Length: 49
Image (cartoon, rainbow, N blue to C red):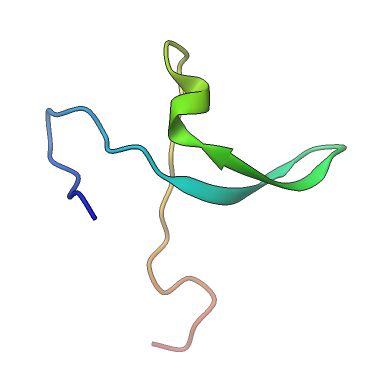
């Protein structure tokens, strides 16, 4: 898997996303090419670590 690097284009990936009114859907980062996008990652979110 390619690594993300500061100042470089993010590698394309797929993930499940909740879309209001449509439930969960699989989306790809490339689906949003040319649009503003904010990604939030919460490592260990909802865990007791």
